[in-house]
Length: 405
Image (cartoon, rainbow, N blue to C red; front, side):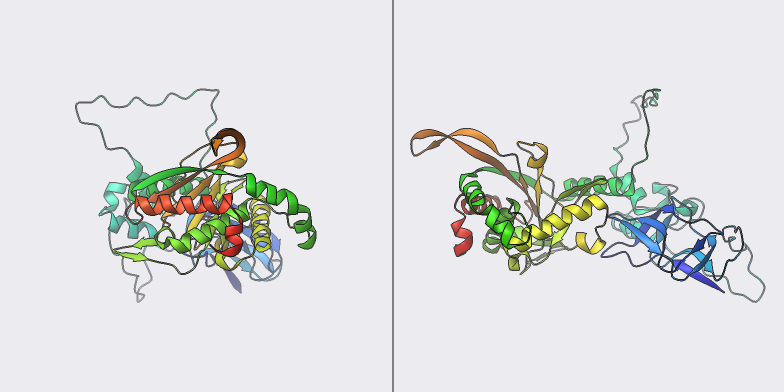
């Protein structure tokens, strides 16, 4: 008797994945809970384990195929099984007499009568697109995927008929063409979506890091010793400062849902970290309840798991506000892009000694530029500027964080 290998639940709002790699081939022996196939989602890579011990009998979804939650990936047969197996045959074109064939898919279909995947169909309906306009999809059997719809929407408006057609790109032997990973395509699509939908503006300020740096230098050794190796960094100060400012300006922590504004009585703080596959934003849940050592420990763990490719989908979902630190790469100033459906993101930058005026005198201070990009549909300029001023005040006088003022 065969055991089915199915696409597991992939997390919040994730309905499809791409088969990235099969670790086992038909005819090969597997043990229960042994990883057998790797799926690439919009956010992370997920390993699917064998539900039972046995032999891979058949593969129903080849590498590169787009699959939905609950769909069949392959089958396992008990025992040693066959020495080789072939993929499951497609269903017969004409069902046996007396058997009712399933009804054709409803809604628009792509060329070749291949129905769009659910996420793609939802987006096509919202954008008032037909399958004929989108064209043949890149999914299995030519089905239209959400990525196909996003790619169609990203296409530039065709030039007027009088314009000359764009010449085909001539390849160069010194070039290397590599297909974008699903994660990279998703990052590109989401950033473009943010630009297309949000009325995005950015406000800047600068912060004197002297007080925080002095406090950290004085207590970092005692902090690390007491909290069993957890290091005191700058990020915990900024998380605390943002939490305090978000309480005062709740619109910065809110989101738009249709015609409603959703205000949140909690702070799920997204912390952008670099991974081998691109930038990911794991979430510090209920950041307003966390202490300095808890924040630092969580961020260190996020960094380690990002490097190891061990972040889970739940780690990356549900953020209400984000912080990104381009300063670790040497960035002096930038305009961060909002991570939808959030309405704001703060960018930290490189600490640099600069001359500034202090009580009528010029002094050299360690300064950092801060930037907050925000959705002007929900956040007024006064709120965004005031939010950033509160963060600046808390960093320049960390005692405010301890006293919650």
